[in-house]
Length: 177
Ligand SMILES: *[C@@H]1O[C@H](CO)[C@@H](O)[C@H](O)[C@H]1NC(C)=O
Ligand SMILES: *[C@@H]1O[C@H](CO)[C@@H](O)[C@H](O)[C@H]1NC(C)=O
Image (cartoon, protein in one colour):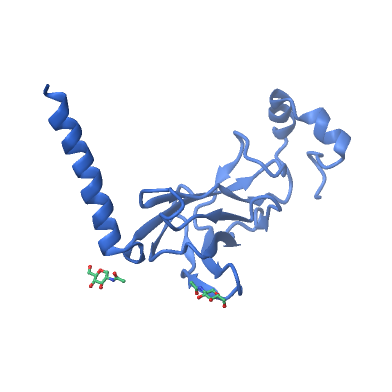
């Protein structure tokens, strides 16, 4: 018997919180966009255990209207902390926009070339598509090191990548490209 009031309370809570959301509007939502910047020390376009956080890396969040490409939100340049982590606070709802965090620059002269794959990453800043919560996580973004670390060969072998990449001709521990 005790179950019924609990269910009723539960439904009521859901009802109240969704009405509040309706009343106050998603326009008033504050999102916290969270991400990380690393140095791809093996020049492989993905993270390995040799990847290093880039303290002081600079990123920027930009949203553009999906229809006419007009900028709907632009953050200031955001600097990653000592762990390569950053957060960006955004107010409003960007259901009709495509939002991306992009690398701007790296403070490391030896690791300042944005990776092709992870120079920018999409982030969803709306609750209309079923995502709730104010924290929004961005895929880690990476700059490529100028010369791969010598240990990369062993690490990539362990990961089972070495032969594959060599065949494709895009990995060589000593080459610059
Ligand atoms: C956002 O919230 C503030 C108060 O917190 C209110 O004054 C304002 O009208 C709200 N804006 C919208 C668009 O709902
Ligand atoms: C996006 O652009 C379209 C077409 O110009 C316009 O109708 C719409 O209001 C814009 N949306 C936002 C959120 O600016």
